[in-house]
Image (cartoon, rainbow, N blue to C red; front, top):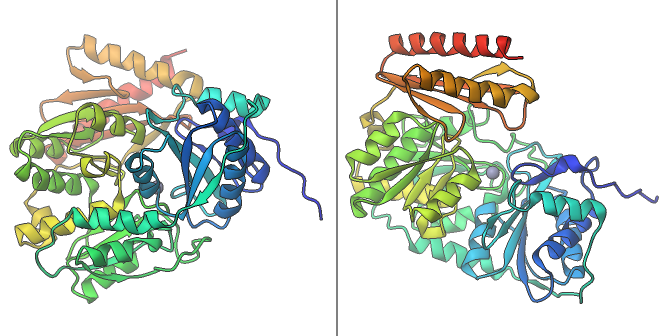
Length: 459
Ligand SMILES: [Zn+2]
């Protein structure tokens, strides 16, 4: 039966990547057009790209069609097969390629897929090439070119495993339970752990393109089995990975989920002990405990906007040793400044081994400040940015210390609050942290009242 090709639609081109539902927004035809558009955008002939894909069932057909489009536009392509997103980024930079494309929808449900595009100058995103790429693809304004060639290169995986495992030093027996959830980490994490000398027990370690055991996102819902196993097996820690291997969530030896703020603080301590004065990048929603820890260990904290592209760029421009986000992305200079969940796990193991303490002891030794769970407030898209800009001016005029790098963050004596418009939904988000519960409630009700009034009053 003949299947009609899908039309390429504008909505799949998003702020930081291309994403859509397979069969509805994305098919082989669309992938081919995108491949051809990438080739036209970067100037085609003489350039070499690496293409990798995650375990999703649609990733192989989409990846093959993408490569076909890229090659017809004159690019040479190295197909490295099923890998993690961090490996694709690493290989692109490590082997000095002109760019890399990862076929993945990260932690989205299995019916989704998409493309993340990395060039030597940075990621293709809105304001950095995505609009041009979109227009070329939609108008099919392709340059004609001499066909490029495709080479399959599966060697990259073992070279990456060697590279990362050689950069960690785990001096004592550490037992870890790892849950890649059938995602991309299954193809390299068990071997990388073994090469680094880590004793790992892996669950859901077979590639599972439909994520039949649990959603490809490590969170409270999906980590319960891992938490139980860590306790039952008396493991030193547990780690859950997202579908494409760029996010990790850790479980301590007491079976507790370790907040990403604590992981970032712990890694900061670990890196700064050896690299005094180094820069650590953190983002506006991180706990004040992170900044305090970086300073306490002689590091220089550098603040960034939330988001992968921003943190990566800050890592490069500041020559930072480490970076992190509350979402569980951790970035390392060792691996060309990219975020990598497998490398982050190895560094957590290294820190425990070097300090010769339990992970729970490290976590409990860090200051803990109460935060509210992020609250969302409805606000129409055409209004949300103005509301936040207006509030920023108001808070400044009241004499508050504000940071407007990303939304508006108001720093108070005993805490802070952050008001940010959502990039993708008609929402404004509020985050609050304070030195104690009493102040937390006070700051929360103050910020909420002012925000709701502004949403109501601003025409
Ligand atoms: Zn991801």
